[in-house]
Length: 197
Image (cartoon, rainbow, N blue to C red; front, top):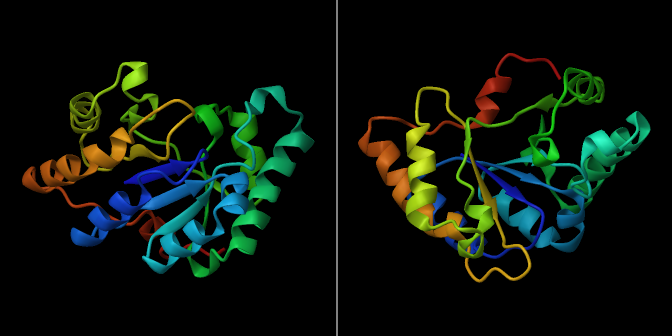
């Protein structure tokens, strides 16, 4: 289970509460700008035992940046997460904004010490009801992609003009169905076992 955060912290209490209730690990990919604005969220996620990943500083389209600009985005986000108190929860994982990747850009991120972690499916809850999404549709998108090794992408917060955090409402149903189907959610940090950083 993974959550991106760039806008605000709406829905975070529900998400952290549900993850705690079910003893489910997650990785939160935060932008550096979000970490600067919500350092207490960085510390809460870390204190709850979840991993923290880098989602760039300002969530730009990477193809519109130079190699130096992309490097600055990754490094600025890393500094912001560290300054906000990520501590030992900080992972060497990076998720590209808009999932816009290319082999060359992945190599650039790797050279900075990060591994690209994308996803199997996005619930699209971030679109909100205003964008045509519903809790039922978000749950269905997650469960239709369920298979061993699947990575589900969800979001904390809402974009301007949205009234609810669909992913926060969908999470209990998604986690319940995952368990009912005999799957177990693992911590992405287990991928680091035996890896020298």
